[in-house]
Length: 309
Image (cartoon, rainbow, N blue to C red; front, side):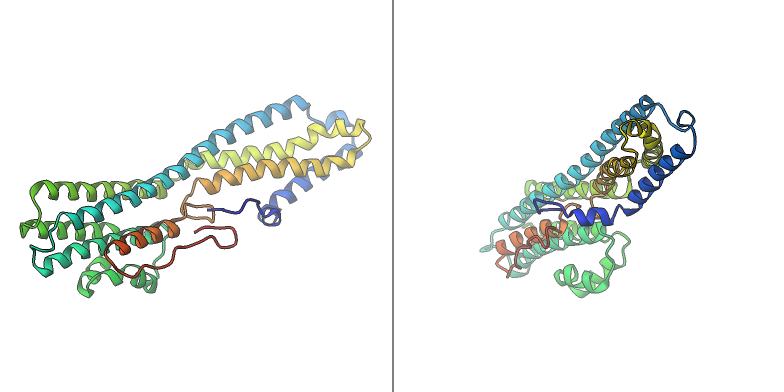
């Protein structure tokens, strides 16, 4: 997520040089043809360009609105996960009486909290397509016994496997009559809500914006940039400023392209620097839960070079 107040103009230019080159070539071509041939045969009515520009702006507005909705949904789901994780921790620790249950069962309630930390970390790694064993071991494996962790690693969806492990832990406490049925149902409902949030995030990741939506937007943008200089060349020629068509076309094309790119990156909330700051969110969850169970918590993350990951 971008946290700095100003954007790097140089970076924006660096990532849009192909668009600038295309705009420069089309406008130079329009200028060259207009000089070589009769203008009536190579110009396009400005009204046509205006209609194309209006249509393109409307399409991009709808596309970017849908893209932002995806980003905001992902952020909202993660906020719900943070809230539900705290709820789960409170339930796991307050429904047991440390003065009246054996030590191993009390340890199980603390282990459930550690398992919840592992669950949010595993979900983050899954959404980011991170498969490095070293990172999984340090972020997830440290919260489990070796045998349990090996079993989790064998599953195709490790996040779901951890949720099942959590559910089995709750069932074990219930079997030992540490929980009453009402408390058991409450905690199980919390795990269910967390699983539903996992599914919503996976749906966002696995279901991008419809590809034709993206393809035709790029195609319409290319057509608009191609037609724009041919529609405006007469106007600049009459003003005795024909060379100005080149920079104007490049600026107009660049603005439309930046709007297009903005929608593209926002529609994929787990893949770019503008994505939901999952590292930051999961670190805060880890800090909250570890402080509750009395373990050493890591330091909170802060933005680096204007980005919060």
